[in-house]
Image: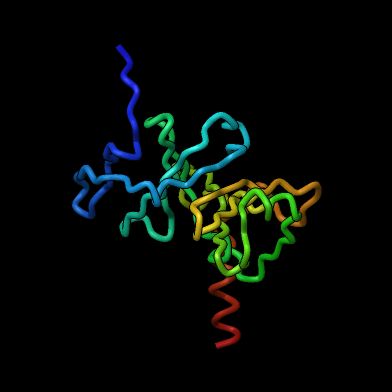
Amino acid sequence: MNATINFSKASIMEIENDGHCVVKPVKPENVFHFPEGIIGFGKIKEYVFLLNEKVAPFMFMQTLDNSGLSFVCVETFLLKPDYSIKLPQSYIETLQLEDPRDSLLISLVTVNNDIKKFTANLMSPIVLNMKNSTGIQYVPEASVYPVRFNIWEGMEKLKANEIKVG
């Protein structure tokens, strides 16, 4: 028997630092709506973002339509501070984005048993409008950024540059 759950009133599990799960209510303003879904998951429209200090700067993008599905992601500018995209007007309109400062760019992460093999999709970032909790995956016609950016190598390069500059 499958019951329909109204996640705007139900709870979601959140991982605490001691490794235990705690049930927390999901407030409607914390649910991000993706009008077009994301690549490969076009029918899934509702997500929440879960943070856990143990795995920072990574976060989890948890679906509300399918509790068994979540994505690991990271803020794009942490990986590539000089990252730059020009969002087409149609995306801006879908997001109802009035000010670029209201946006947050995140990249989906592919996890591997070896942390040195974690990659991030810089080619098609997730763009979030933090004011109205709307998201979209930006898929450019052409990109200078890779689909599989090696996070470990990228962080090593950033660290080396900080040492040279500092």
